[in-house]
Image (tube, rainbow, N blue to C red; front, top):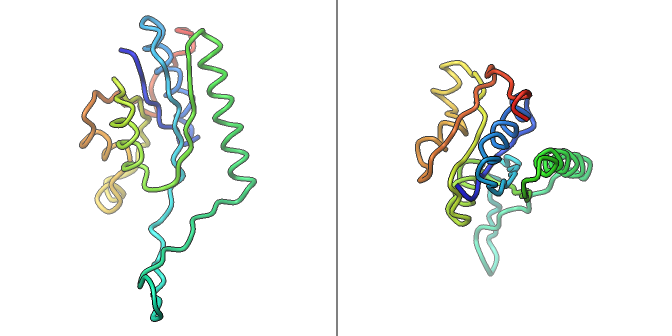
Length: 157
């Protein structure tokens, strides 16, 4: 196992997900890629009745404070990974998380995706689905799901 993709959303399960990935990566000296995808709703398209393209998507923008906070959080997670002697990179993207995560997994040819699970109710999954569920159904590599209530891996580090 040479590379592990770890999508993070900075929720309560994020630290457990990163620690689980580190635990799995240590024996193989695997490279860990920490990835955050900022969910962006599909923007309404602007219809132009003049010459040129008919549909123009508006640009996607995030607040600078949010972007800087996410970079800092990713940096702290990367320090956790490198502090145990593993190599790591970080990626920040915008778009639909499932699509972005799967595209990264394919392009980087990762050996494993380690992702967290949130315990949403049945109605949520019926109407919204979930990122973890989407990854699990469509990934072409193994996927490890770390539940929010999983036992801590603090002792393993």
